[in-house]
Image (cartoon, rainbow, N blue to C red; front, side, top):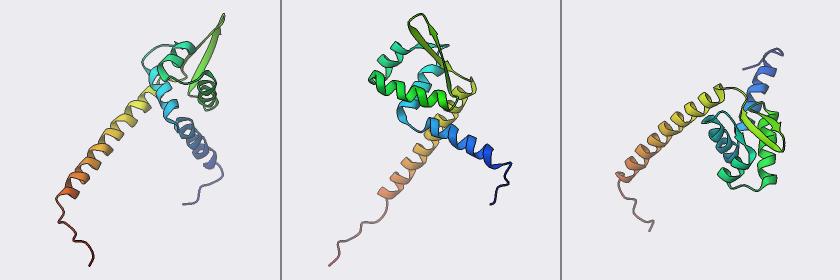
Amino acid sequence: MVFGSDERPLYEIKANLFKGLAHPYRIRVLEILAGVVEVPVSDLLAETGLEASHLSQHLSVLRRYGLVVSERRASVVYYRLAFPQVADLLRVARLLLSELLQDSQRHQASALTLPAISPAP
C-alpha cells in the first residue's frame, strides 16, 4: 500500500505514540497515572523502584510524545495523563493481552495432546 504525502505524517504520529508506549516502565508509569488525578514524582519513584535518573528519562519520553504533562509546585513536580483516552488505551491493551494469553494457553494445551516424536535413529 502506498501512502499519499498527506497521509504519511498521521501514520508517523501514530507510530511515535506507540514509541512512547514501547517500554515496560513507561507502561507502568502510565498505569499508575491512569488511576489518579496526578502523582508527585516521589510517588512514581517509590512505585516503580527506578533510580531518579532512569525515571526522569522515561518521563521525558512520555512528555515528548504527548502522553503525560507535568507541573512544578514549589519543589515538587506532579505528573498526570495528558489525555484521559490514554487510560482507555491502556485498558484496551490489557484486554487484548488477556485474549492473546488465553489463545496462547489454548495452543500450549493443544500441543500437549500431540503424539510423541520418537528420537532420530
